[in-house]
Figure 1 (cartoon, rainbow, N blue to C red):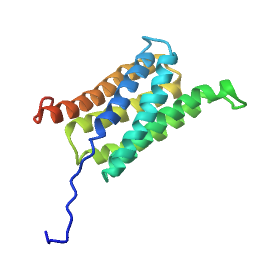
Figure 2 (figure 1 turned 45 degrees about the vertical axis):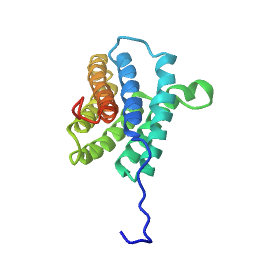
Figure 3 (figure 1 turned 60 degrees about the vertical axis):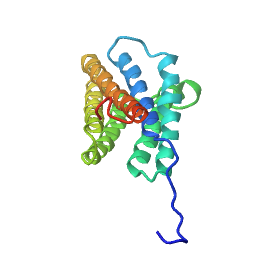
Figure 4 (figure 1 turned 135 degrees about the vertical axis):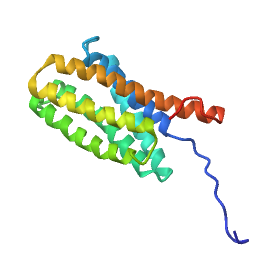
Amino acid sequence: MSQNETKFTEITANPAPLGLAGFGMTTILLNIHNAGILPLTTVIVAMGVFYGGIAQIIAGIMEWKKNNTFGTIAFISYGFFWISLVAIWYLPEIGPVKAASSEAVAVYLAIWGIFSAFLFVGTLKGNKGLQVVFGSLVLLFALLVLGKSTGSETIENIAGIEGIFCGGSALYLAMAGVLNEKYGRTILPE
C-alpha cells in the first residue's frame, strides 16, 4: 500500500443472523398453524409483519451495505413476502378488495417457490446450513402449492411439519452465526 492510500476496516455487524432469525422464527410460528396445532391469530400476523417482514428488510439493507447481493435479495424479498402474505389475508377485511381464491394463493406460492429454487442454486456455492434452509423452503412451497390447489388439509398439515423444520434450520443457522462469532470458534457447525 502506498503512502497516499487509505485502508478501510469493516466495522459493521453481520446482518445474516437477524434475517435468518426473523425468517426462521416467523416460519416456525406460521407452520405451527399450518400443521393444525394453533389457529391463525394476531401472534402470527404481528410476527409476520414485524419480525418476518420489517426485521428481514432491515437485514437485507444491511447486507447491501456489505455488498452481499444474495443476502440483499433474499432478506428483502422474504421480508416483503411476509408483509404481502399478511396483506393477502387482511386487505379484504378493510377495503373493497376481493379475497384471494385458493387457486390464486397457489399461484402466489408457486411463484415464491420458483424464486426460492433459484436462490437454492445460489446456496450450492455456500455452506451446508444455507442449503438445508433453502432446500427445505423449496419443498415447503411445493407442499403448500399442492395443498392449496387440491384443498387437502392433510397435505397442508404435512407442509406445516416440514415448515417447522425449515424455520428451525434457519433459526439454527442464525444462532450458529451469533455463537460462532461470539466465541471466535465453531460452536455450531454451519
